[in-house]
Amino acid sequence: MSKLEIDWSQALPIHMESLAELRAVVLRDDLTRLGRFDEYKVRQRFRDAFEPNDTWLIEVEGKIAGCVALKPDTNDYTLEHFYIDPVYQGQGIGSQTLEQLLAQSHLQNKVVHLNVLQGSPARRLYERFGFTLDREDEVDIFMSRTI
Image (cartoon, rainbow, N blue to C red; front, side, top):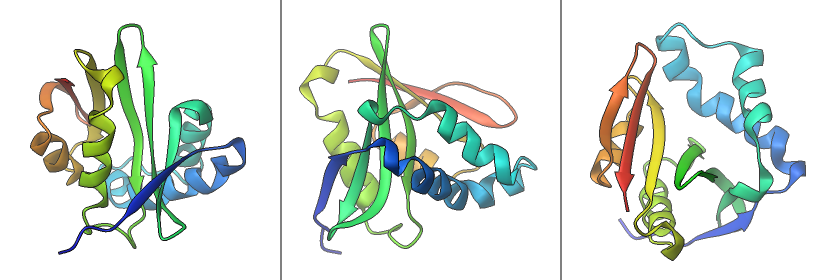
């Protein structure tokens, strides 16, 4: 498979609703399986946490293929809202994005934290990039990695 060329651009407040919808689409199956899908809450949780300055659009051929946020948290960072549109999943976009994101010089010697839903295939992606289990509960798996 050849690598797709991906670009990043800063998210803007006007992107909030389309990214909240992307979150609902991407998480629907996992949240339904866990008995946690709620049409309103899945979008509202994104709206409540959305920080445009910490969020990037992932673009392929000028189209939004996903998003990712990397938020500073004291001395560490939190990786969140990493969603790839199902149309673009399985094409290496998640791997390319994570590779580029974690290579940023300001992350060196920092810990990046994240959580992923129980049973989500995204866990394998994070493990390939060296994230390890910190703890888990019935819904979430919490992972981290020192860069």
